[in-house]
Length: 246
Image (cartoon, rainbow, N blue to C red; front, side, top):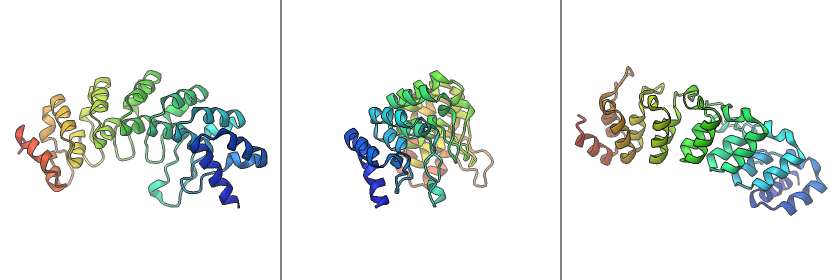
């Protein structure tokens, strides 16, 4: 019964069904604290992910403390991320909700999850340039202060997902990002080579042609061409060779 009520509650949030939520709250006031069984999301996380700003407002009106709660850690370390509701809104591209959450709790924009990802990383990975602009307006230092535990910058995150406009924006905001290495000694061009994103690779090459031969001190001393070959990315290999990689 309890599991069913939790699922019903979060389903109503996802659908933006305010009438159903108010009915459930009248019957079970503590349901507002229920975590979603599958995702571990709080009520506010589910609303932020779904993009229903009216539901976010309702939940915060009923229980303001929801804004400071993380999602419930899951058994697998791969999904034990300790996400805030603002992380989730950034992942899903909901700028209006981010603005509301920031107004209520400004420090949320600089909180990182267990792997070191900030909301800026999440926005970059999702290709949400409007959210990146907003976050950096609030704190320009976000772009250079934080890396993930693996050393990934927001630029690496955007490159990995192939978001050309996001890559352009981040390089405009901080040109030094192009020379940052991960703990695996990968430049952003290595990330593009891994995934085979040729158009992103071209942008990075235009910004710094020396990336073609960058291979720091890892065991393989792997250049982007070597990595593209290992990852079986024929189009990326063809492009690299066309600009002089060997």
